[in-house]
View (cartoon, rainbow, N blue to C red):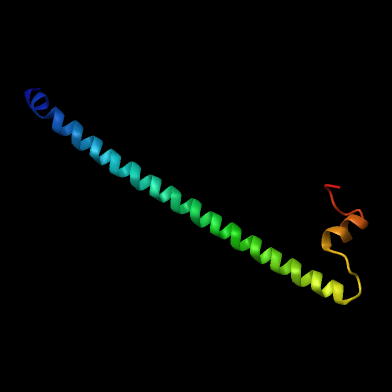
Length: 81
C-alpha cells in the first residue's frame, strides 16, 4: 500500500499520458477514414456526372434534345415529380 501512495502521482500521470496518445491516434484514424470516404464519394459523383454527360451527348446526337431529367419527367418515370 505504501508503494501505491508513493508513486500514485506518477502512475496516474503516466496512464493519462498513454490515454491521451491513444485518443489522438483514434481521432487521427477517424479523420483519415472520413477523408477517404469523402474522396470516394466525390470520385463516384464525378464518374456518374461523366457518364450522364456522355449519355446526354449521345441522346442529343440522335435528335432528342432533352436532358435526362426532362426526358424522365416527360415519360413520368421520376419518383420525385
